[in-house]
Length: 208
Image 1 (cartoon, rainbow, N blue to C red):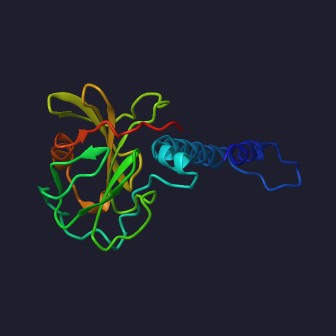
Image 2 (cartoon, one colour):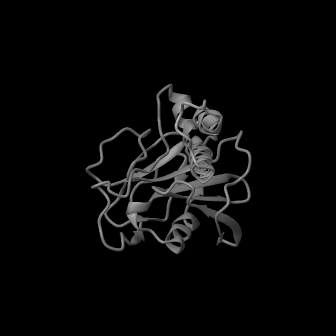
Image 3 (cartoon, helix red, strand yellow):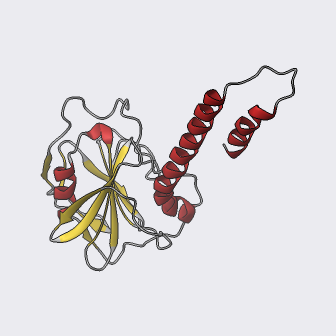
């Protein structure tokens, strides 16, 4: 991306035999290039949150929760949260889940909540509600909507348009909850879900 911006900047230095490019065209091209570079860096800042689990199991994983055209999420206004009464998994326990979803699986780094027919890898977060600890080498929280979880401050970020990420602390752990946009959970429902999350001694914050 940087070399594209540099090339655009050299448009004004073409030889006399080249076609002249108006100044306003050059300025617009440079602005589009810089905007694209900014969006790319912002996306990397968000997607880097999911690299912890991938590094631990030596596989490639992407935090992206999938496009809003993902056929798995239901249409309309999304799904409702319902009380969870099944067996809990090591790492994180939950009080509620989206209706029709199950605890697909967990490792020490994350808990994946998915539809019963989703048999994808636990490192694949597409279409899933995911709970994890924030990376130990994370440098701050992305900007977003300020919320409150059980009396503690949190932030809902939408840097990645395919998913919402809720960043908050339970007083001991820095937690990240990610919900695909296509699931249709509102900010209030995401907070409601997070309020029922408990971190157990098996949970580990990754690095990277």
